[in-house]
Amino acid sequence: MASPTLPLGRAVDYPREYDPSLLFPIPRAQGRASLGLHDGPLPFTGFDRWHAYELSWLDRRGKPVVGTLSLQVPATTPNLVESKSLKLYLNSFNGSRFDDAGEVLARIRADLSRAAGGEVEVAPGVPPTGDDADGASIDGLDVDIGFYGPPDAALLVADAGDEVEEQLRSGLLKSNCPVTGQPDWASLRIEYQGPRIDREGLLRYLVSFRDHCEFHEQCVERIFSDLMARCRPRRLSVEARYTRRGGLDINPWRATPGCRAPAAARDLRQ
Image (cartoon, rainbow, N blue to C red; front, side, top):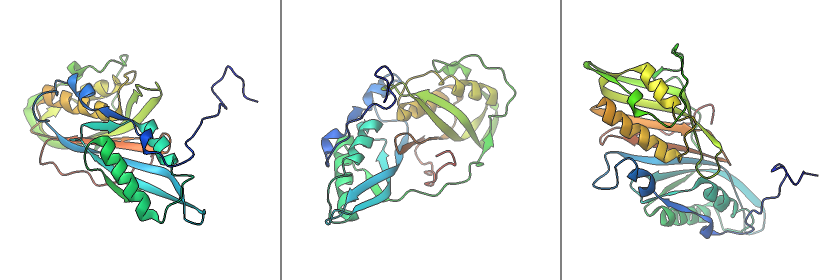
């Protein structure tokens, strides 16, 4: 029997039937205001790509069906959807009967589009795991680090006399969920053209998110905004691939207009 003083083993009351009211939208403006993005057009394009690994429903004869799901929410939607609410919403399909997968996907598309405030793309399945080796890793740099938050944009510097076009990556990004306080782990891919970014400063900057509480989408927008302000690239693409929690992984991407969107893929850690 679980101890009443410990969270382990406590029952969680999951929804018994399909319930779209479980979705909890959060205005993106709340996070963007702290970045000075509350007025005027957004300085980036992008989307939030979700992969859902725990999807099930009943067919008309009551037999369970299982599947996976990919979602793509445009960064221009006024709301993001809180991840635990999405988990509970998807679990609400478990005990409800539907004609076929098409009906389930149509319901999810309509419900998420309503919650986000814009058209959400929904497709069955998740992409295969890809090559984690794209770009140059900065994780092996021999540096001393003793600062873990809040994120410090002053750590970012670039050499205006050395123009480059390169891809950098790190698997050391960690932040914390502002709702639960639980750790969120991610790998980051940065592709840019412009003054050469100091790699040691970039690594220290990414590690400064370690004790920071912010949603995945907001962290990526902060990284994009800080890099643009401090390093002045002419072209910039920032993608984070967060590891799975609650049967979901989230992959926000933000870029200067005109950048090619990253192909759908998953890290080995996902």
